[in-house]
Amino acid sequence: MGDEWKINMRLMIDGHNLIPKIPGMQLSNPDDEMELVRLLQIYCRIKRQTVSVFFDGAPASQAKSRRFGQVTAHFIHQGSTADDAIIEHLTRLGKRAREVMVVTSDRRVQNEARARHSPVMTSEKFAFTLMEAVQHDNQQSQDPEMSDDELNEWLRLFSDTDSPDN
Image (cartoon, rainbow, N blue to C red; front, side):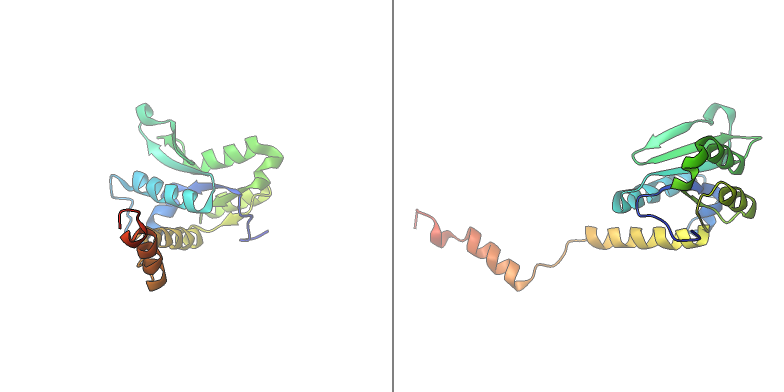
């Protein structure tokens, strides 16, 4: 299946592997994980997808999974890795692992995903896809200019010339 994937395929993302591939994001930023989650929320809304993102290095008190709409963030405790957690999740899925696209540039995770028949996309390629979706969303959210025909239609609909008071 390579880098081709189904439109509604769930994504399983190696978060700390993806962050440095996104322009303007750095692992040294204390809010990098939540910045990525916010971008993924936009992506999920636009693409109508579900995403699980894995971050390692969480202190024991913060190691948990949290839902943010269509994004589930898994904060993996220190001493374990996101790589291991992704592989464990794929193993638990069994045959359903082929329904999950794994996003990582880590060769070990890619090989383990492919061994479980999960398609793989590199973090670099997904970062490009993610930023395209975010840019598209930003363009759509700006106030679009009204065409002359639309303006005339609004004027016609709301003009006082047709009101019974005239």
